Image (tube, rainbow, N blue to C red; front, side, top):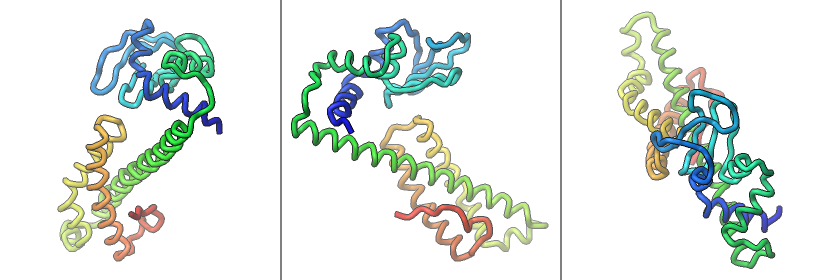
Amino acid sequence: MNLTLDYTIGEIKSKVDILTIVEESSLQLRKRGRNFIGLCPFHSEKTPSFSVNPHKNIFKCFGCGISGDQISLYAQLNGIKNGKAVSELAQRIGLSGKKLTKQQKIVVSKRQEDKTLEKRFEQEYKRLFYYLCTLRDYMKVKAKNYKDIDRVVLDPILILYYHESAYHEYLLDGLLAGLLDELNFDRQIDFFGSAIGVVNKWKGLLRKQKLKGFENVELISY
């Protein structure tokens, strides 16, 4: 691993905002929610499908599929390779490319740890969402399999689920909003923590009941 390059890229990403790259170009974007949208500069289109997320410093065109961070956007807009883009942006923020100091190496290590934790959080966040979706779908099928309502009301697990279903839907809406980056990180943490409690409760109930259909569902442990 090239620690100097890793440090340089990290510094660029932390100090060069993607909207700065946009403002220096001919791109014309308008704000929509947390993102900015406009016509894609990389292919011909009449309906805006190019989106920039300033919170994560990333862009994506939902028309042609091109995506990336502020470095790749700078490279694409200026018709240069990513390596050249890194060099030019590094000069802009005053990085010389010399060997890293001990403190800079610590910064690189911390960033790598943060990336690992962020990736794990995103994975667990998705697992919570999909588990609750699977649980909801299972309960719907379970209810339909009964011939009459009298059998439904005699199923304690099914009744318990439907008593809690409104809260489950609230959690699903919140988790989905987080996956779509419509919530700030603090709100994502709130929904994450609440969903963990619900999922752990239900995985315990389902283990005891040994319900068919959940034998192979990946369970979450904390």
